[in-house]
Length: 201
Image (cartoon, rainbow, N blue to C red):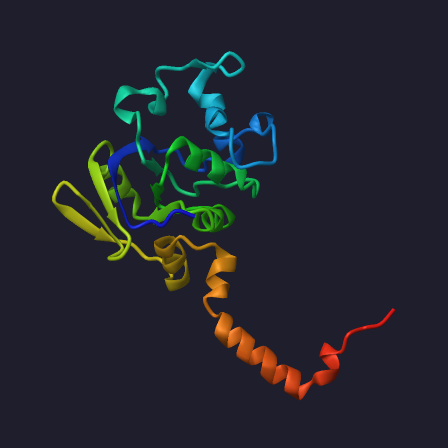
């Protein structure tokens, strides 16, 4: 994964509560099991007046000129609810979204974000509204969000922060402790040698 540190972008507002993963990437847009080729289907029910012909709806926020190239999406409460499909995070990331700020996230969606290098930031609803169209800077090392001369702190557990800062997935994070794992294995092999005997057919 690409490491995350500082993100500066206009805060593009999609301030709707309970945006589910089937809206983020409808099942009909998932035409392969891979992580690519999903960006065009992102928010297809809202983004297009005709999804099959890919005719943009000019009223949808991501189609507006000021949103082009955005790296930051502002969402409503319980963002990413519904099914556990990881494709929703893949589609957002492929589109260019690197962070989402919302009052709350569905737990599985938040976990999928962290494991795919997309930063989910939880801030109170009134703060999220204040960030609309402002130039926002998210600083992960200090866990702060700054805009218009104000700064807010956000919570993130140490393991998630390490994964994002170092660009590690869950396996990479575990392998940082390979020496301790090897030492434990050797000690266990000495204590329970029968466990490590090779089975013969």
